[in-house]
Length: 359
Image 1 (spheres, helix red, strand yellow):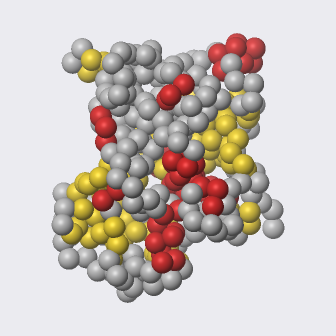
Image 2: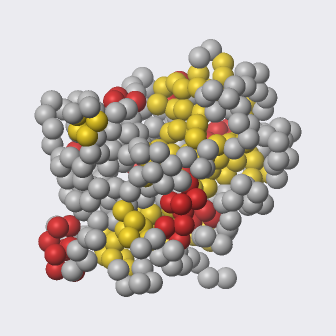
Image 3: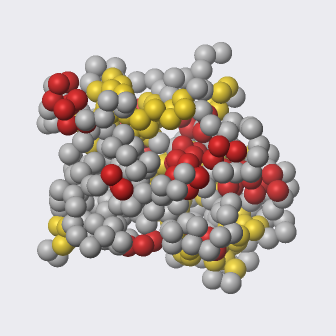
């Protein structure tokens, strides 16, 4: 059981501009407040439209609070605390339940939120390093964090927030830690069904009343022609929807799938592209949720990798990479190859909080 004494927690956190948010049990988590941002502020053209992460149930929210640290679980609830061994071996639904048990507004970090952070990091030149190479980053020569597990004598997971500041999202002690490596992180609000990409509208996945069960009616396909959301047919074959094909050894978004396999595929994130069936507005949405590059500069995404499976009935997503992923890990690393039931030792999660808008 971690020490919840506030003075001790404040001492460990050492970040005066971070915030302690309390759940319905009155127990704290260390959170980082991210203010509302536009597409332009995130490097997505000149649009002053608000990024989808800041729209919940059709209304704009002023900020999102993201866990500073990968989460642990105590008495069935998720907590963001420094110096802890992050919870692993937890399913997608288990991670959601641990977040939602904290009370209204608490939720599993969503794909829209993760993408927003990744875009911010890229825009500001602070794509973080992390534990992706047995206790250190591939670019680092020495071990720099507190080990919490070992694999064949090598460091595996490390304690939350114990790496150098280069492991935080903004390169400062007040940033969000371990978005690159350590453990994979489940994200809500996005899935595939036989390769058809489906999302909850904007950041509606931040509200637990919007169901993310396999049969939920909240899941929507993306209209390839104009980026609008359309009701899927349930078989991954919705007419005109955005789907994932495998062309010339990389993922290509299209309205059709010519190569469909249940074994899964992977490629560099920067090699993912679209064919002519994907319109500009659909591309803009894919970029906003971090599924398509918005920069053609070689190496702009630090070698981060993209994994998907277009041959299974449902696949959920996790992000960031693992402690053994090497240079493939990073804020643009995205993996949609696992069922929601997966609960292996390398996968964890991170909670977030939003003040839910009232009607």
